Amino acid sequence: MLKRDGSLERIRPWNRVSPALVLLMFCAVLNGCAAITNPVANGVPVRRLPPHFLARPRENDQPVPLSLLRQKPPEKYILEPGDVLGVWIEGVLGERNQTPPVGLTERGRLPPAIGYPIPIREDGTISLPLIDPIKVQGMTLIDAENAIREAYTVKRQILRPDRERIIVTLLRPRTYSVLVIREDSGGLLVNQAGLIGNTKRGTGSVVDLPAYENDVLNALAQTGGLPGLDAENEIFIQRGYFKPDGDPQRLRQEMTLWADAGRKPILDLPGIQTIRIPLRLPPGVEPPFTPDDIVLRTGDIVFIRARDTEVFYTGGLLPPGEHVLPRDYDLDVVEAVVRVGGPLVSGGIQGNNLTGSLLLSGLGFPSPSQLTVIRRLPNGQQLPIQVDLNRALNDPRERILVQPGDFLILQEKPTEALLRYLTFQFRFSLFGRFINAEDGQGSVNATLP
Image (cartoon, rainbow, N blue to C red; front, side, top):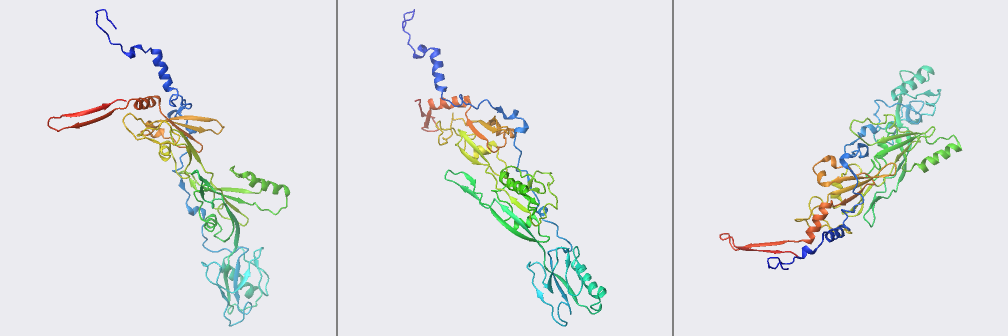
């Protein structure tokens, strides 16, 4: 182009490009950018989130002492209906100058029993030859022996007080039949997609617990121990469930109770008491059960529920998938990103994230930091929560806990997306080689594709 002074001016192509064309090209570049078209970008910043939308920490919960699940051993054994005594009365139950029979008890912890088996009847009495029934309910073994001696030497004068030989021992303690139903015996199942689920193959056992061992801890010990990781951290006891009253309406209510229980709380019916025993509690919280609640009686049902698999979901620039939440400890958003193999602090993301592949880190490859947690509310609505991963690494208040059902979507901020785009479009390759250190001569190659 000829200037006024007669000189030639070189025509530059950039001068021919109009600003409208530049704006059009810029919009075309950003049209497919998820950082610009992110549908969940307008979430509530986590620092402005009301406390009632946050999850309660679980890893601070403390296990309930096992001693609270077991009844206190008595100082003396108290006789009740169902006990079987071993009784030896020389000349009445056994010939004189004869060695009394000795029998080993069914429970190895009890000493050998001496005498013939005499059960305590439902009315609390025992029946012996030549005398009226004797009430022994509520007595100790020594008290029962003294009552038998008085009956034969004082009341009826069958035996001489200075020559009687009477021995009373415990042959078999009374037992309580308890039904234990466990849904935690199936274990965890991993399917072809890698999803961990609960098989929920439960078991049922009728356990006969001897007196003073008829408690929750002994029932669990005989049926597999404490609930596993695939079970809830609580135990339900249903008391008074079986009542032979023959009421059809009550039977329908009881059947509906089990059919509709599902994941809902088990409700009490008339005459039925439901006791909940949690196995982990927050610090400083008193157990919501009494020592009498853990003592089991005949007809009680001990129920251990299977734990519903609690999962959270990932998408965006995180590898898409469904992931299992731990039961007894917490998982915050930073830990969740690391757990699913997402980028953190270093490393860029491949533009096509169908496989969630990661690229190597480098100059100009910013790590995406805009994490949106879509949380489902109790009323059925959902709340998008914005978390800045860079800020969360320095501020613990940003590291909110992941709740069951949360969707974690990772995207780039617009500035991060623009920097990544420019990095891909303008790649510099620098290579330097010095001949020697004295003259500092060398060469540098630079390429701009």
